[in-house]
Length: 224
Image 1 (spheres, helix red, strand yellow):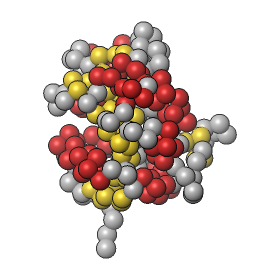
Image 2 (image 1 turned 90 degrees about the vertical axis):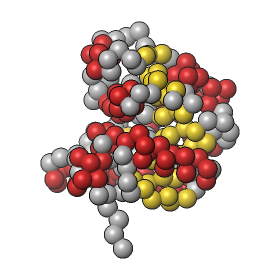
Image 3 (image 1 turned 135 degrees about the vertical axis):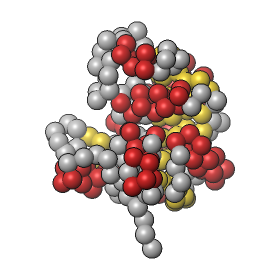
């Protein structure tokens, strides 16, 4: 499958490397594809990352990555997601599934970050409103990047990932992709995109758990 990933930080790099390993054709979109030596947040410089993909991944602008993807993944920093998607362009996104893994984390006042949107709205909803013809599905945003692509690293994969989105067919397709791409076994379909409020608001708790447990390798298991 042709996959466009928007965002070249640790999340985009981790997902991109995994999908290349699975045999997919990945284009990683970034604001500055020519700046290979810049450190990308918690990720590595792209000059170091590209060899890890066997030279199979490619770099491009947001627009070119979105145009390439049959499915597009938003792995940008949440506070910059709308701007990045505008650069990607409606024409390159309309009609496609956009898997949104971003969180609206605001680091302007230091650590721990707060949420730039919450309670009555979510980043997922803002993206869907801004791009009404895009099939937005929120998922994978409740865990660290390494666990997104390899759930078996915690409790043998015995924990949950959530999906939210207005398009039921898109949610079903993303559930299939989560299982085939990354080996997820337990997926909870929460329903429409307003349910992304809940998964995004898990992040303050998740961050505190990281601090208390001393590791980001943790996730949520729903029992009933």
